[in-house]
Length: 256
Image 1 (cartoon, rainbow, N blue to C red):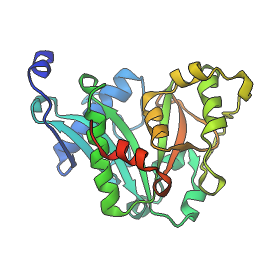
Image 2: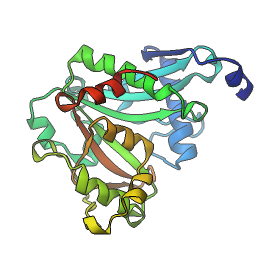
Image 3: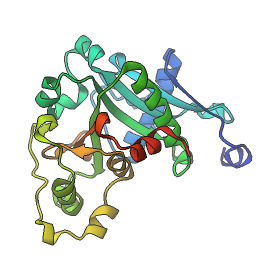
Image 4: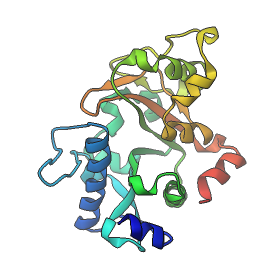
């Protein structure tokens, strides 16, 4: 398979999953990343068929990336997205298992929850994520979304190991009160004072996906949340699209 990827340039196609096989293929990729790589688990994870799934899957739209030059790989990138209109069918957002989203609900803005973002290992470091972002940008435009939000993760559950990056996020990227989620089981991110933070070390230890959201103008909610099922420390990211600069929009909408 590696030889195939070396032989062919990717021929990416981005779409909303429309068949059962599309969903299963996205869940297989999620299993590979979140269970096999990161050690996650959950009540509905199907280890026999190697599917990472949960009760929210039927309510989300699944934005999937396929490489038509290597169709045997199936889905090579995925974003799971839930609009507030569709959220009413299940009664809550996925993030509300970890965060109080009262302020977002009160805002009256059109919300879109992002989650389960992952890329096949063979496609990391290339343009795959930017193609996913292009698809997401079109989705946002179609549904006139105002706010993007969702949890993103640090690997591991020892909060002290993430003291530098979490404190850096707290002091530099806190969301304004009117749109700030708060973790339900509150893990204080303000573990170090500003003068105790090694900026270079802190930034280096922020996971790539979170760095990407920060570059797009993302801010963080109040408090981290330890997700023992997924073996992660989560933060809640909020992106207010009206405040996204033109530079941010260019990063977000143009694949490289």
